[in-house]
Amino acid sequence: MTPMKIPTALLLAALCLNAAAQSTESPMARVNGRPIPRSALDRAIEQAKAAGQADTSELRQELVERLVADELLWQEARKAGHGRAPEVAAAAEAARRQAAVERYLKAAVRVAEPTEADIRRRYDAIVASLGPREYRLSLIQAPHEAVVRAAAEEISGGADFAAVARRVSRAPSAARGGELDWLSFPLPPTAGRTNGLPLPVAQAVAKLAMGEVSPPIPLEGGGWALVRLDARRPTLIPPYEQVRATLRQALLAQATAAASRDFVAELMKRARIEFIEPSVQP
Image (cartoon, rainbow, N blue to C red):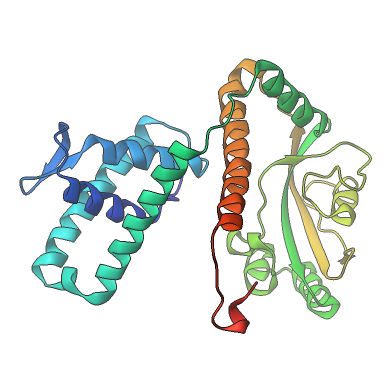
């Protein structure tokens, strides 16, 4: 099962807001007689989808269990007197403000629905960014040549790549032992068309045999890397209709984010903003 990506605090904040509102909607569940409204689950599902998770029955069951557990913990925390702590009150106020801001922006910022042509263009652009094969890679990246060369010697001597990556890599994938998601890029690799992989690394990957670890690779702009080719397969391109809804949602989210930035910029132009401390001025 895919690990949860939704912080417990977000679900707990949603429960607090719903408890305060005492909505008349039919509850999804009751914990010691206290209802959890169905809207809490709807919001949790939307947050999970925004974080990239698929809306499956397994996800819904996990979210329900998490909401029930959070309500139970909230009840016990209140019994123990923690609900009156100053930091808890501050967190509740921050959650209330955030919810109000999100509601206001949703009402104030309207964007046009992506057209079929817009969605098709995004699909075609993504397909054009792919190459004939997809690669599964493990990466070690560090700022200093000596660190990467020492890591290469350890690995060639039999050390586990993942263990070395967790210890020395400074890439975001370090926590996963250097493992990256499947990616593809046109061949031969060229600047700006490697789907986020540093060009020298993409060039090395294209020449690696399965399971082979590259020699230390100098990176443009500084830093060094090692890469291992873990798997390779023909690029899997889903049909347009299969991904149309996801692409539509992505375009809508992108347009909403851009419109929100413009809206806030206009508000700031009309507002009287005074910086009391010079050090806090942007």
